[in-house]
Image (cartoon, rainbow, N blue to C red; front, side):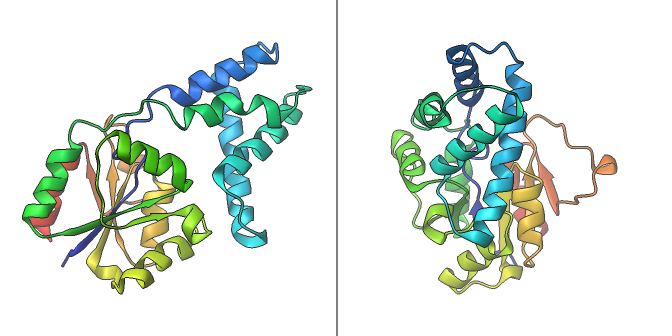
Length: 230
């Protein structure tokens, strides 16, 4: 039986919008580069993910540090001679912008309250940016678990195990809800949790994916159907 739900935050509860890609465009403009912003950002994110995985093994670095280090590597890969410590500023600034809740969030959380289902946030992020957006959107959670606090990033199994241990929960009673197949499906399932993929745009094709979520939903309001099946 599902008694507890762990929500990813950005892309699940809070719409990240175009803030990140706009920051990338500004950075490339500042360094006088005409490379494609989407390609550059995709490579930057891949490099950042590599550093996240490494930091779980060699020593934790917060997300802002990883943005800077991975930008330096991406600059090098693209042959851009620029100081990442300076040029990363538009991306860091974008972490404190005007990102808002998806329309279904408040109603979905009220539904869980009515059903007396306990829920928390489990987010790969720094504390200050997460708390900034929760306050901006008047969103209250009894417990919040971040990579900065736990010193580990998704999808390392330790991320999810620490949440279970801190609450005294059994994995089989928990549902992880998020928009990432790797971080919010593969990671939670590796420790025995069930996982819900939030596919707002309807782009997930089960027959084309090696990753199999326990449930796929288009809206957080669909969690009511998931709970009814349990």
